[in-house]
Length: 232
Length: 232
Image (cartoon, rainbow over all chains, first blue to last red; front, side, top):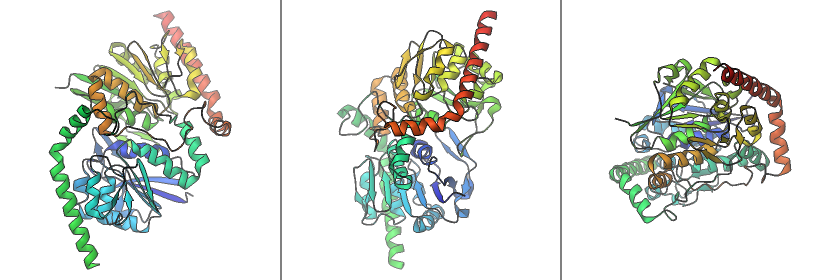
């Protein structure tokens, strides 16, 4: 019998590598099961890949690790009361509350990051502030039982850090060798500090159309969180 | 209208990160569509993730890029005549014939690697020899129109190398920044040359049960290839 349940919470507009990366690592946790779930168990389409056979978030009694990936849909997700109710319920009793990329905004909107250090995709880190989080530019941040990864591909580094926590460093190293994880990017352009000004400008220009909407969503989610905290 | 079709050929027992990694990169190729397909369009389950909505390999008229991922199922796949017929058909007219991990064994069994340099997962590289390939220990190998990646996570480096070929280096660098691909593994254990002897031993011990079967499958596939070549 698996001792440990690792739950990955999916929603429309998720970025698939945010969770397929850590899934491939964490599915190698001994005595654990990894469950992928969505509201109602609905299929989730992510840029052409369709993920089926998902559990219904509402029927997952509890989990030891809650993992929330990021993606363009995070703005809608953090304002979806039904989804957020499940995130709050599952995260409240989880041993570890974790995210990759803009999944940390969802954790923030659920109230898990107040006064806690958290990472996020480099372009969206500032949006953690309305939730009272301490913004970290680390690729993998740990603050107590909160593990958060940076943008998209940081999910793999995050996965190995979490695997080492759950199953020990020796096991994590063996899995790393099995997955041949000695990355060697053909270019050095993966962070704004090292990318050319032209590259940063090109990426920012492509993100511009969603900046205002996403900021508004984060502020609205933060207001709701304050109201709930006051009522509570 | 997309100008370019990138086809990812799935089969039972595929390792999902072998293709989800490059998919996340290559889906950002301008004027291209990425199609994931399987025999009969059947859903493909990979270590708990279920990929649905797949195209039927037989109904894909042609592709510009054929990408074959690896996985435990590669041994069965290279002996599956129906699957291999599609791989041979689609690869024969593709501009680029590519693979990640043990997907190169399938390319070899299809006859695409005779006299060509090719990479593979470090533990299975030798199995390329029966197919007349020149074994490479590179993380991403290119020999003319053949791009092959090493084990599992090498698929992301492979994806960026291929994206630069298809869409130019400037675009690849922008995508790299968008996906925050500046990896920083918590451990250095991703290749046998740098992992501890104890780690290598642990991983080899876990692979031992499949070594004989996989070698037998590669030799049988190589015999079939020689017979076909003789007949042809």
